[in-house]
Image 1 (cartoon, one colour):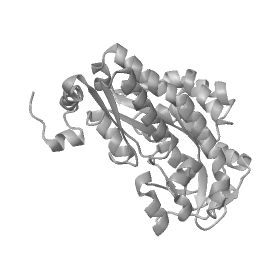
Image 2 (cartoon, rainbow, N blue to C red):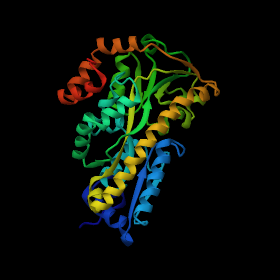
Image 3 (cartoon, rainbow, N blue to C red):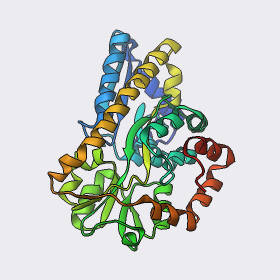
Image 4 (cartoon, helix red, strand yellow):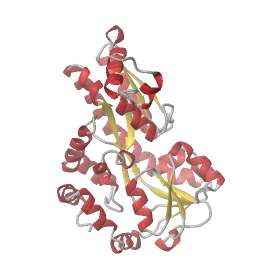
Length: 337
């Protein structure tokens, strides 16, 4: 096999060769080492439960499998980590479905604006018919997803200068969104001017006025300290987002079936408590963030949903996702388009 340069390895060139090198190095001394990258803070529920899963895996395998968790974008931003896991340079990532959609478009199905009435409905959809279809598409992209999606929660809108109460308040508003096609589409349909910025650069963009506001779950607003550079928060619940836990498919295939089961079971078990902890955190944070001088309001979702309907947002995404996946979604949400 031709020797890979470091540059080729790190940029993902020669993916099959990189994956082979990764498998050998990960098994050095009879052990598997899983480098797991996240974009979230060390104290976020996703990070804490990833660490807990790693401890359970190490115990169940007598240390033969070690999970090394790298939070706070230490291994690169979301876009970079997605490239790295595809090349085999890292073995595992936790990544938002809205960002994964740049590679596997159907993963954005649960990001449809104002689709889910609560988190439990979203979990049921992703554990059920919707998740079955989406996971099959992720596998086709050379990535192995854990069975259960992890929770990021409903996203809320913050602003530095004004209250967001109606769609009219978003007219021309420079809204930071992640590099996600459905997020851009949603806010364009609501009249805003979306700007794509990775979360690792978002605090500075808010501080310097590159954007007027952003949208994230309260847990991210708290752990990323966005309240320091924003004044208002609209509890819009405009989009639910989950985190897929993904393993490089070649690396996954290199593990014996019994090890695969231990790893998969550990992360899927932690998913249940991560979901409840994420929900509890988001539900508790309004009071805490109010103490940080963030001013809250609760918009009526009906005008926003009506604008998405009249602008063609639902029709557009129904066509993009196709009848089978859209029908699976509406089993849990009711009619949308």
